[in-house]
Length: 152
Length: 294
Image (cartoon, rainbow over all chains, first blue to last red; front, top):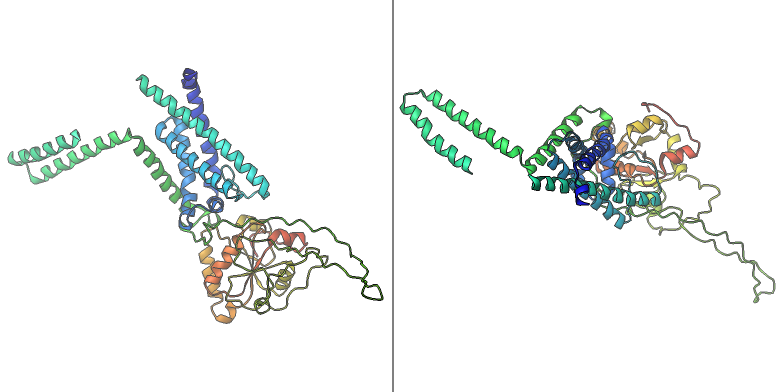
């Protein structure tokens, strides 16, 4: 089982998929920073002075980390960055679920879609599960990388 | 560490040797410079294999690209590096939809103490049709501040077949950043050619807005310039006390409230927020203007 989970065939596909997801997620945010700033504001977790800066920088870090994974350059660093970003997203959404503050995640789409409170809460739960799934992909990459190092 | 020690030792000896051998001072300095470059190159190579350095490099590249992209972005896609959002950490109160109360038929009961039977109508169930907003500090009452100070939060019946007539007075209210108003008051102010500001994104504004409204998106970088321009337009006390109506998308949209607070901060004391926003304006069949011009 361990051999299959850390097999290079699986690892390369996970790496490409994770990279592609982050590149795709970054593009709408890069295209429209004001809307993404609004999304970050809705989380009510970031101090006012950092909202715009986060909205500008975070999508570019996502894009570069995703591209690094796809191209196989600085894989470990990109994997770690993506892991940190996913952990931050999961914590942020979970805090708002706990506070019953229904928000649009802003993960792949930064447009306000006019959902109801219940729809947003449901989507937030789905987002947490999805991000946990991606965190498992990061874990697979980490495990495969560690096994590769051990074999050398 | 070994690199540093070796380099320091070499640097201490070799230039001295060169100087003793009669090499001009310029060449000695060049030699020192070349050695430092070599040290830097070796450090760079070792750090390139360091994951933390690589991650920091990705973040640094992200910051540079973000700043460059923002510098070259179009006006409506640009954000100011530091925004001013007063309620950034304040969780808004949830707007709970109020279910309409059941229609209570008039209760007719005989009064025994009277010789003639009389009819007593049950008082209507009082529920507020206005729901709590994110800025709970701001009262949602009539638009005349003098009239509203002694009034307790009186419930408004939900069974409003005909909307109440608009209030006639739109006095300045320097004690409050804004007052939320409904369609009737908004329409009355629109008919009086009062200044309307659209706090939604410019792209949304261009798809349709209240005729005469100017675009003042709080999320775009030029908002402070626009506010300053408005201040320059209305630079005396009398002009600043003229009514201004701000709207966005209604519902949980707070952009109009944020803009109102900005205006209040620079002495605009007669600002009204159209609580239900542009969707409500459309629902009432009021005129809509499209395009970039007011």
